[in-house]
Length: 527
Image (tube, rainbow, N blue to C red; front, side, top):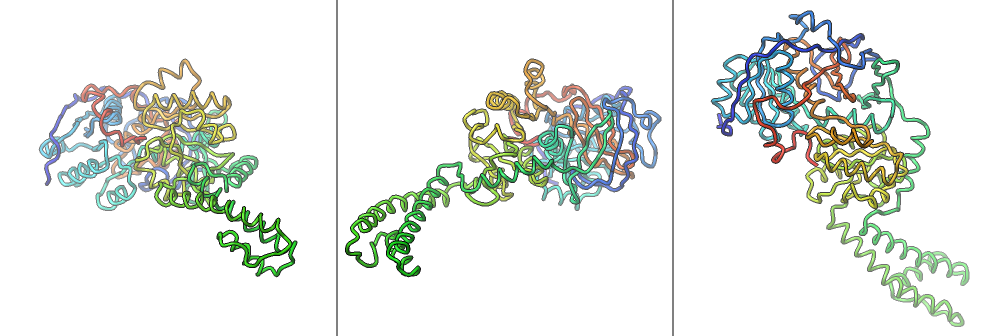
């Protein structure tokens, strides 16, 4: 087996008595292991809005379907913020944790010799995650593995090749919640399950899964926004191309109409002469006694030279440029009823994809021309503008005042705060959704400023990962997680949405924070 990176290993003492976990009342059904975002058969479940004690877990684990024993040890691999939060949460729930920051093969063998109940691979990139997952399975072929992977192809291969391996994408986990906040003020989450859109709402303090459909007014604004976006270029190259093309067409039509209407020439002959004027070779035949037409034709030929230059420049720019926004078709910029997503990292890309599946027009804003997800966004038909999202002129040009919502989902919370402040300056009533989780900037600022609706990706991911780790190996696994302001709800087959509290902070006391934050941040979505 290939040698893994050098180790920085720390171990924890056995955990203490677990805190209370949430209660649930509902009749959600289902079975089998599924990744978040796949279809759900639940119709309506009731959960208290906070995270109280779960009577089923308080009574002890069920050998068939309940969680694993609290005495079962866990192994956490990685020094990311998510890894530290998962480690702290497992400790609070009473599970002994062996936290390995960057283990080599000997450290893995030593940790897995204790026969842990689960291993969480929470590192900063897909390649390292894949190597660690394969190494863990090589050492132990029965332990449950939960691994963070963004690339869906890698996740699918891991699921097929490794038994009891659960690939998890934090971006996929949070996207339905962010989409719900963007499209419906009364929904906690909205997603498309393959059969239709599903929303989680909370009428009368209970969580319910219901079918979702945008209002008639919202659909009408979205349709008008798409139509208005046609032939309204946003970038300079498309503008040059369109001006040149429309100018040439205008000269052609004007000359053709003149020849047919004034000189009563046949339609085909008139079109031939008009085309010769546009091509710059002059009228097909002289028109004695009509000096005005001859002068106009000469001017039209000169003007067409300029239009041709503009058209050529636009075509060249489109051929050699990134072509992130279309002039016609689905990749035009919508003008109303759309959602503006600032930051096309992993979270931003998945949010755009979820909104498109719901039929909601979306436009992405990315400041890095070399961002790796730009190619994926283009292949998905998502229009993207290269600009700074905190620039008020950019937000105004994107039609923020007519937009449905703005989502600031970059990996740096200070940037998200700047985007939220700029958005409120351009459109004070706009709904703003922010992604948090990497540091405390948003938590410290939202108490002073009404920034918008904030969801913590680290807390939400930690709730789902810990639920996967503590699920019974022979039972069913959580299907998805829905994030609320102060608590996360994990969808458990047979029980519905169950509140899942996690540790308040990411200081597990075993791996120092900050090292991963300055390096690779892709586990929670860069950009």
